Length: 326
Ligand code: FES
Image 1: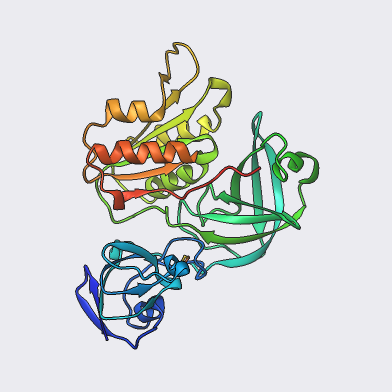
Image 2 (image 1 turned 135 degrees about the vertical axis):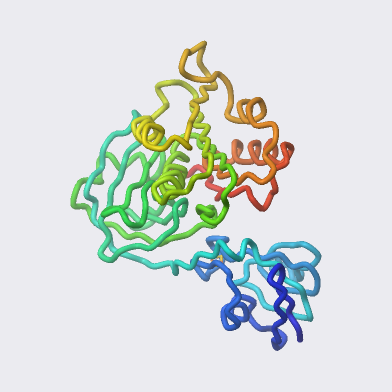
């Protein structure tokens, strides 16, 4: 059986039922992966033609004709053509489970806490990725790293959800020195370093954490791309992290940001409206941009739609879906 790989135009030979990811790795095809268990989405590939058995095959169906599959969970079932995403942007950070100790747990806003952890061994990750934190038995939640892998400690921003099964108990139970477990990195919404054109980042709430990681990853490594951030909140009281943003804006002339408040009256410094309104007004042409979205699923969906209407390529819009869990 032959498997043709786009866009690098390589033809591989495989037996029916071969794991797609094993086939790609064995033949040194550049493909990203992380968790190897179908959770992170990093290994997503497109089936152009032929048949691939993947997670959508739960109902016994095969993927073909432009459908996406997770290579780590898929096998090739016929001659086929596969498209790998962004072959020059490959990341490989195998997911690990590490012990971690709390070094700080402090207040960023009324309902947002900053958690800092020291892990027993270093965690390699790309800016924008996330990890599962297990605070106690049946107390696991996913949070994005807000810093960079080279920082001494890991930083996470946690929104406390009133009545939330886990987060409403953190203030009481998480102290400096507390031990927890971390599983990561996960996620495909990581910084693309090879792109030289403009970048638009949009964050709402604690979606600022992965976006800060992406901003620092780009700016501190010397990327010269024009980088714009829209950071949305309901009211001024819901904002946090402006000190981080002011420092970046002062240090890097190719970075600017705007705060968008959806529920408050006129304010000199801030824009009034949703981040998607500001996107529509200020960014008429997003072709050849890279777009990073992090926040409430409704915002991510609306911003993706608005961006594609302004010429953004769906494959260049990066977001990990986070559904609120307390
Ligand atoms: Fe395939 Fe994570 S490596 S989904």
